[in-house]
Image (tube, rainbow, N blue to C red):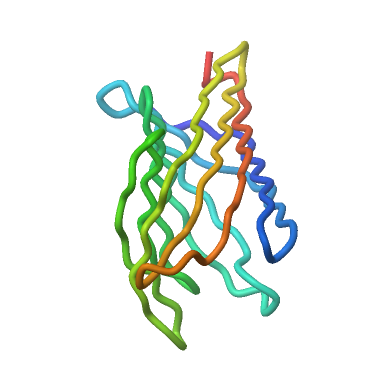
Length: 138
């Protein structure tokens, strides 16, 4: 069964602040929460379809559209992915420093601190907070 929920994503990094608020379609698959939603990417207001997967100690963010990438956040681990836009493509290493997932009544709060590297060089440190809310999450 799929239910609508609210998705709020706020992030900060070396390049400033970002905020996304959207309605998403949520469902549970094998005990994991899957949320599909659309978000604007960058100054040109290009759109991307995002698929968020929340597991016990793991968060996945899959984007398709203006940006194509598959980010996996697991505390104290390094994951590798490709990051593609219409203009460029490169490999990324995601160093997840902190991941917390808090579940309360009708709400899931996710906080991630991470660093991005490419070609052995540090790109940026970043922090993101996600709030998923709706009666489906009880």
